[in-house]
Amino acid sequence: MSAVRLSKVSKGFVQSGGGPLSVLDAVSLEVRTGEFFAMVGPSGCGKTTLLDLVMGLTEPSSGRIDVGAQRAAMVFQRPHLLPWRTVLDNALYGLECRGELDAQSRERAVGLLQRMKLGDHLQEHPHQLSEGMKQRVNLARALLVDPQLLLMDEPFSALDPATRRDLQDDLLALWTERGLTVIFVSHSLPEVALLADRVAVMGHKPRGELTILAVDAARPRGATADSQRVLAEWVEAVESEHFGGLLKRCPR
Amino acid sequence: MTPSRGRWLSLASVALFFIVWEAVCRAGWINPVLLSAPSGIVAAGMVLLSHSMIWLDLAYTALAFVMALGVAIVGGAVVGGVIGYSRTAYFVVNPFVVAINGLPKVVLMPLVVLWVGIGSAASVFLGAVMASFPILTATFSGIRALDPDHVRLARSFGAGPRVIARTIVAPGVAPYLLSGIRVGLNYAMVGVLIAEFFGASQGVGYRMMLLMANFEVASFFAYLLIVAAFTLATTSLLQAVERRVTHWRPDALSPIGGM
Image 1 (cartoon, rainbow over the protein chains, first blue to last red):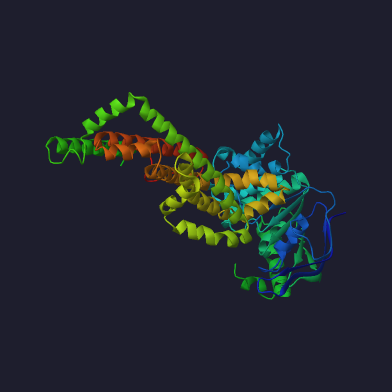
Image 2 (spheres, rainbow over the protein chains, first blue to last red):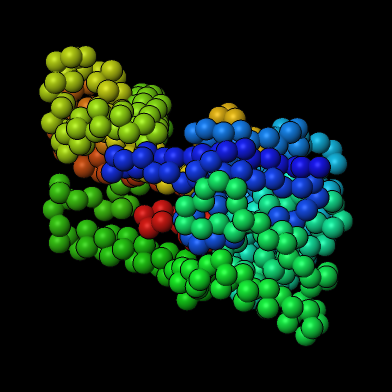
């Protein structure tokens, strides 16, 4: 069953210089229900645009996007917490925007935040938090709206490796537990190798049917030396075959 | 330095100032026509406060002040908000803002008298014109400082314009607006008093000119202190509100010139 289907979707922008800029050219793509789907490619290849389209934040120039009646939530690259709200109120913000705050919301939020190791920080403000904690609140805010589809735009790229590892584990646990469909954008092959079922490879100008690779590695991944070797080989193979050093050259 | 020690130091500095002032006057180094001793000012003030005149003056001026500030808050916030939101409105309105803002507003006073005559209308007019600019520029900055990513976030959760206005625009702009109003307070007071200096038949400004014309320097100073106390009280009140609204800020320190 497909959770998201893109049929020949194109998206262009009018550049401030005047000429049109085509970001996506007749891209077709299918994401299955319940899978962890990743999109990987260099900066500026249209990954974020694709997420915006699926989320409905922007309209395609042409083509069709079919998301059905699913509840979707987005986790942005930066946490974008509202500085005047506490951790708890920030976590509740998604529900508030949807007009779905009810008697149980607070309790559910507290429960989730505790589970995400933020139980001692409920009444703190964002400036008191570390980057990792902010990103946890960001994730909690999205999960609290009970999404079936979770869109994530390089959510861990600004974190130090240990914190990133921690959050990746949290995310995988929540994904399994809740049966989410995740679309995860990244520019890091090792990261998507660790997380994803399938990976869409995006070049500089994505067009047509995207190349999709399966990550054939048993879960849990990366816990043993064996598993790490399998992932590293996968990354090496994909890197040389599909990107030719493109990702390594990209600025971030 | 600990905060309490800092407070004591400020208090001691003020006490010393009044002691020296009193001593200098008592020693006869200064012509009493030019400067009254603090004790004389307090005595004159007590006499003034026991008569209804000063209360009527204060009420008259305070009413003009409140009306001027009210007009300035509404006008400044609306215009500042619109030109902060719309680039078109900004380019249409900005030349006039720059021109009028560059003008020392006091020079408008003869025109104000020509248009609305002397009296409380002139006070409100000048006070409002003077106070609206800091409020306008503060609101403008507040709108420009909003984070477009917060709006994108809210929209991703399906928020409409009303929710965005309530949860992002209002809390984001409030600290700017309040600091604009705090500056505007003093401007409104200056505008009202200047208008009363020019011509009025009552009010604090009118009375101060009259007292000076009669060389009642001690009473003049008493009025001056009352005006200072009034603006200090309103400014402190607003700072208390500001602290409540901006308590989440890491750098919540009271600004210089406040308490």
